[in-house]
Length: 331
Ligand SMILES: Cc1cc2nc3c(=O)[nH]c(=O)nc-3n(C[C@H](O)[C@H](O)[C@H](O)COP(=O)(O)OP(=O)(O)OC[C@H]3O[C@@H](n4cnc5c(N)ncnc54)[C@H](O)[C@@H]3O)c2cc1C
Image (tube, rainbow, N blue to C red; front, side, top):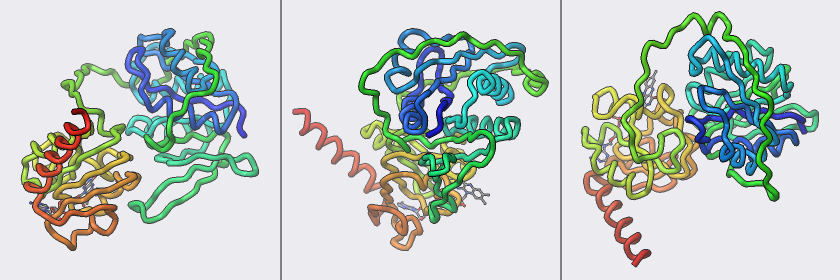
């Protein structure tokens, strides 16, 4: 067992992102002194946040404020994490697996003389006490295990890799004294001149959604039936690169090697061929359902359930049947 494990808490204001509860649950299996690192971007961890973090195993919350640079820049976040590691030396630091997290992890590991593993789906300690992270590689065709030999293991973990479980006797995480550090030259070398929030959507974010409905070239540009199916299932809508390049949907919806990496419990791909670059971003999906009119489409080679048919007929029929069953269940 490693002793101290740090978990970078993803939060918007005082609202804690659900991935933190999964990371804390995982951290508990790797060390008994689990500390939540809270990068202060203007909001301190309030009582509700400390209660939640404590419920999932954080012993304390370590607030860190980096002054003199935009708090969301990779270099700023890394400056904060370096300060946290100095204040609370740990053998392991866990982060989520968004683009930003992976960039942060890489930079941090270099500066902290550590080892980095991104996109892990499991993390354990081996008999020698080394941190060993498991991940899927080469579009899910291989599983690899990486033992970190550097001073500190910096591991980004895919969402839904661990089921968040509260501790038996929860206690609110204690608030440690805040650390205030000055941003280094790399963080100060960039000035953020504007930031606009994306229009709010009721759908969950693509990277964290438990259900993702993905459309490809086969949609021919009409995502409306896929959006309806996603809404019935409470899921997010994603797309292949072909669909985003065509301008049928925004680039932020692209799933794949050069897009968002997803690990939903349910992936439904409609009009998606299952090309290797796409598969690289969704191979951690637990159950894959494919709708494609071509019985030889590569996606059927790795789908758990396949429907050969025209998506313009199959997808609305699925939505209708789900609605009918839900209606029957609630009436
Ligand atoms: C360096 C690099 C990086 C890349 N990164 C990514 C990435 O991040 N994400 C990504 O997605 N791609 C990426 N690509 C592109 C990738 O290689 C594929 O070209 C792309 O994923 C294919 O998208 P598609 O499945 O929508 O289209 P296609 O491969 O053209 O497949 C369309 C499918 O729709 C089916 N279809 C057509 N009409 C219907 C219908 N009415 N009903 C049902 N099925 C129908 C067809 O049978 C076909 O199987 C990358 C490529 C490169 C070179």
